[in-house]
Amino acid sequence: MEVQQPPRSSPWPDLDRLIVSSRPARDYELMFALELAALAGRRVLDCPGGASSFAAEAADAGADVSAVDPLYVLSADELRRRLASDVELAFGVHDERPEIDSDWLAEQKERWRVAGERFFADYRPDGRTRRYQPAVLPDLPFADAEFDVALVSHLLFTYDAVDPDAGLRELLRVVRPGGTIRIHPLVASDGVPYPVERVLAWLEGDGHRGEVVEVPYGKARGVGRSLIVTRGAATR
Ligand SMILES: C[S@@+](CC[C@H](N)C(=O)[O-])C[C@H]1O[C@@H](n2cnc3c(N)ncnc32)[C@H](O)[C@@H]1O
Image (cartoon, rainbow, N blue to C red):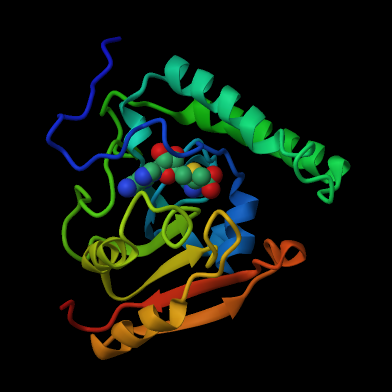
């Protein structure tokens, strides 16, 4: 299949910059303090989806889910190769960081492998389903107020690929009033905590509610906190 490339003038990030990961839906449940079963009948956005099995598993649980990622311009074979090399990078940290338990790393790597297989069994990058759409924050191909819930695992506040305020404002546009945006983690990839109080202040000023919650995911690594934003009546 011919590989589409984003137009040169587009704001799409360099596709090689961020590691692609394949977390299972169980990780999303723990990160975002939610249960898959509660998403049945809901319109759900996974941004970025990467090679996570969340979208496939949430769809099985009855959610109407769309995942977006710039890497969804890639064919399944290309994305599979990309994931395989990124997984080695992500889990090959033991020499540099011997404090990380090697049994835990091996267990996580296996969980990512299984989730990746689940993802590739579902992945259709040819536009025949609306489940996997190539797109980037802060420019999403969705209508205003289309989603009940938007989930952001390991992008905003973590990597500088997107301005967090612009990304969050775009998510507020596509989530309905009363809907939620859930973001994890609240630290940069080098472990420095993001100054989330600044974000809470502008959210409140714009009529939204932001709450930092403790979550079990990442607790042992000191990153067990997520931001839950409830959209107010208007977006400004
Ligand atoms: C660390 S992965 C997270 C994947 C998945 N959420 C998970 O937890 O397994 C980060 C992903 O963000 C994607 N990405 C990078 N810049 C982006 C942007 N501006 N908008 C949406 N996705 C982006 C990358 O292609 C990559 O797949």
